[in-house]
Length: 217
Image (cartoon, rainbow, N blue to C red; front, side):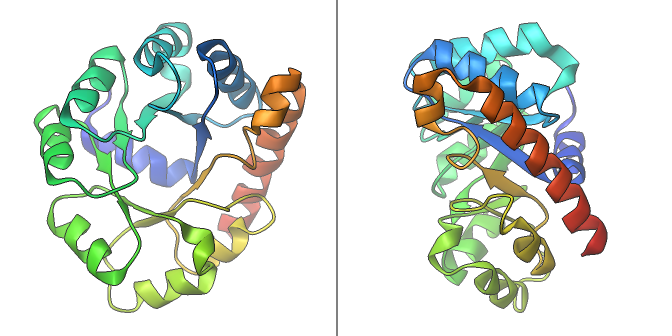
């Protein structure tokens, strides 16, 4: 398993985390495979997926070093331990919980807690966040990211929520170090219809768009 700092560096280098939410474990597995086929390497499986830890374990065994595998919606220290034991290399949370952050670091794993307001962002950083998930980013849009970067130029922000291929360039232009993309990529309607080829197509489009956006930004 990669070192904590190496994982953070790779997330920043890749620029995008694909968020996998699904109603069943089988859908989550198939979605993760489709995303990887579309050239996205950083994949987050959320703990809202039934049997999430087992899905993480199976993906870790199946894809190994091909992907950078994380666990999302980590709400408790117990979930953090379960995720890491299954093979998660990083943890992402929708909120900032000191216990979850402390446990992640005790386990030697990076943690990306969720924050939105300036005070929440500052608190998450002081508690030891490796990156900060700016959520829900769509509420105020890319310009809000630029506003936060003014007083917090040293804090790495990863906008999540409403981010996709159509607007990611604006987020990078305003200071995002990476983005997280979920429902616009792994659409549950596509999962129900078994249209994994469309998820692969969207992943490939997103990967290409992110590359161009970061080069031009």
